[in-house]
Image 1 (cartoon, rainbow, N blue to C red):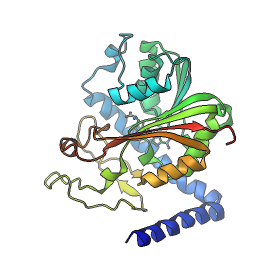
Image 2 (cartoon, protein in one colour):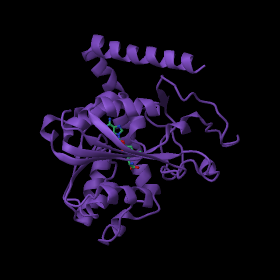
Image 3 (cartoon, protein in one colour):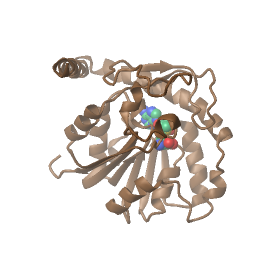
Length: 294
Ligand SMILES: C[S@@+](CC[C@H](N)C(=O)[O-])C[C@H]1O[C@@H](n2cnc3c(N)ncnc32)[C@H](O)[C@@H]1O
């Protein structure tokens, strides 16, 4: 059974490599097809998030002691010691997490996100928070050379990887953005959650998906995980990545994995029924270090 899965995975990996090499520009266009559509769809969803959010972030960030980080990420960030670091967050959404890291003593922060609407909100929040942050509208795949060798820490959080069609390319860019000895910290949803039903009428642990899924998801049912409403949305494309996809993408980028911790805590807050069982890994934190010869 294991050997068969392995064979399938190896075939898929080599297929992916052949695709990248042989299609070249066509492959780039394929990536853009997905990310451009997601940009439109995220732009549509952000005003809905803002309307439905119960926390008034503009009020909260006036208080210099306010931050949105939870205990798990705070513990790891304190271990890293972010004091005086230059930090980048990719897929930073409205910037609340990056602004919060600046409040732990980081020197500067640059947040990148594909959505024009979230960058607008991030700039508004930062004007109030008055931290040394800058927010830039960009597809993560378009981050340019001007940001290479620039950061001590690249930080990624819940709901970043699922929107990205190519993890190897993504971590290749991150490795270039890091200074020598720079670190990455990823606080993400555990991919095992992809296998469970999203039908509210079934036992939440009913398995309906395939952990090794290769096809993308395409959906138009909205993405209002803030207000928990649904609407007919523009098309979102998302992608399934196993832990081995993640580890191999990080390792191949030249970043050495230093620490990996799984938690039964749900960092997305969107699986309360599974989280209350307290029996599965629901989130993880990975910390890596750019090796001097990458
Ligand atoms: C669920 S949020 C995750 C960020 C953060 N953890 C949060 O909870 O706000 C996903 C973000 O990824 C951004 N995104 C999706 N695809 C992207 C891409 N190709 N390049 C840059 N940002 C992207 C979206 O615009 C959105 O703001």
